[in-house]
Image (tube, rainbow, N blue to C red; front, side):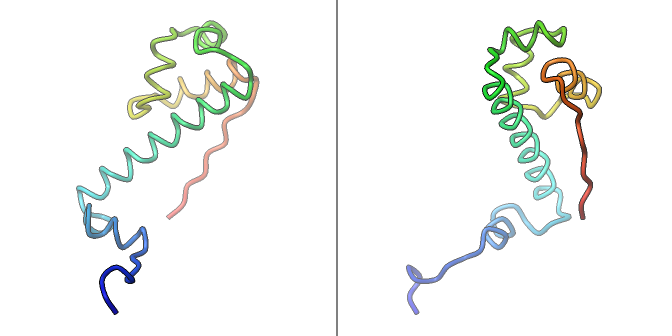
Length: 100
């Protein structure tokens, strides 16, 4: 079989690119990816709610710049801030899941 027909799983690709799970480089990638997903999730929720970044910021007592930063790089968001945005900004409750 030639190389063009060989498929690699995404997990295997990550192992090659960033090292196996548990390695420093892979864990950094995983953390950044989770932050990215959180930002996208908040952006989608905001848009589904028909809110601009400025409107959301006013509802939860922060700035448009901060909302934009979260949506594009959520790596430094505090849990208390996330909870406030979800509760005050969207009128919802935050649920967390821990998985291994």
